[in-house]
Length: 276
Image 1 (tube, rainbow, N blue to C red):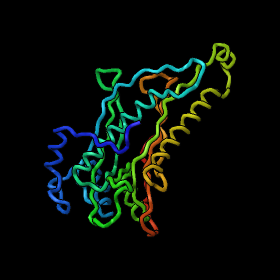
Image 2 (spheres, helix red, strand yellow):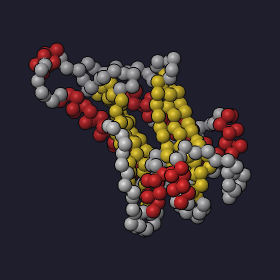
Image 3 (tube, helix red, strand yellow):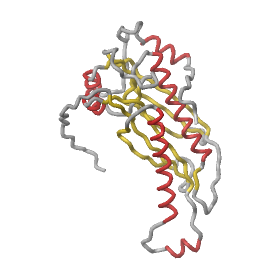
Image 4 (cartoon, rainbow, N blue to C red):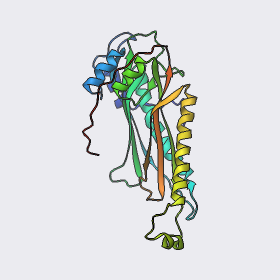
């Protein structure tokens, strides 16, 4: 895995953009901020005591190597796991480096995406994007225990609620596991044809792989000095490997408590218009 304390260099284009918009001093306002926050999120982040500095991003186009699993054996594909983990970390580190260049206290609304690079079937493009922010109260302990800017994928609304309850984000944490699920023999497939029956090889493999991804995400939170992880979700994708090679990715925002405020939070009713 990559070094969590790495400081990757930024491109000249990124440095020029950041320097053009960055505050001239620690207390000065940004010359012009950019943000991917919605209007509601922007206003709530400001109400929580933060000013947006600018949109920050990191990218890593990665060549994922080859690894073969045994036909009848379920197993982690460690070479592929390392590739998927390190590529995401490189994108995240470059995003954090941009935030450091802007003297940010945190990054909110982090989005981490992956897509197959057009025209190059064996290359995957990993992109991390968020809005760098700075606390108006410079005495507040907003930064992560490591001293770096915090990172969070929470919405502006959830970020505001977290602050109201006395918690702050620490880091956007993840754990991944690429797993090969064993194939069945022809005899097993014939026995199960036309029947309602559990597929134990798939059940056990997916169960094990999810637990590995979850454990790695929790280990990142513990490493960063957090007391818990909120907004956890587990995504599954085959990417370019076919149905028997699956990546299990656990994501969330680690948090810690900084004061004993316990507000009675009133959340508005939200009616989803999603047909799904």
